[in-house]
Image (cartoon, rainbow, N blue to C red; front, side, top):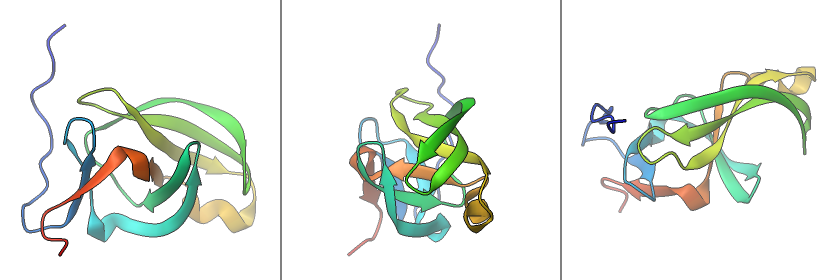
Length: 115
């Protein structure tokens, strides 16, 4: 099995979040919706869209905010599990999360012009 060399690179002009393990780009700062999320292992950010991420099978999980159908997401480059994608929310107040992505802070590093 050959490692995939094609990856999405986000424009240098954008503040980006990258995988802390292999530095693959994961998301633009503009895609950040909320910083006040809880992942399986600590604080997490909610993103509108992400790149270089693979998706596992969806399963129902009881999270802090109720029952959701979620799929684990992992870095395409190094295969580290990063968080999950919300496939379906069963409570109306949580519907805004559908199709969005959680990435745990412990797996992300900020790059490009944050100062």
